[in-house]
Image (cartoon, rainbow, N blue to C red; front, side, top):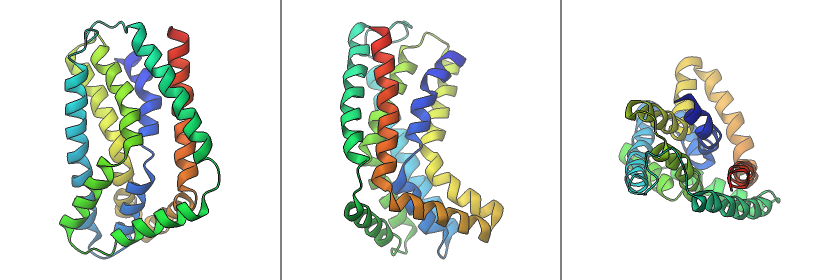
Length: 222
């Protein structure tokens, strides 16, 4: 299990960086009725990720390499190509895009004006579904799980770890406020300011990191 966990750890940590969901939750915990609203955001995000995990794991478990512990050459080649594409995308994302960053911040801020808990849950679900970068990062990690020859219980632990990673952006803000009160709110707001001011650059850094991981995995295994 530890070998598999080490293999998916970089991808899991990268999947935990989701600026839009984090920003939405920070705005929620900074406003009124934050307890109910934050739970709505967590629920909306969790439901979508449970469905995504189930679909991806179900599909990958049908591949011939499932449970063998040995990946075919095409799998490593796919990771190498995906890494090269992500590397090219990350170069563009790392360039300054002040207008795009400002537009994204206005978009996230406008979400926070909705009062209903169900609206927040729906918005979180929508933002999760449209977060293609996180889904792309999860696919090779989940493929490692279905490919592994370890026991099902141990695979479940690794999947639970990946689920925790993707939910961390919406769990951390309310947890910080619950534990630290107003200091937690101020701390989250400082992070929010940095993230929303450089959102595309943050995504670019994550894309570059994942690209290096995939290129290394693909190149060294071919």
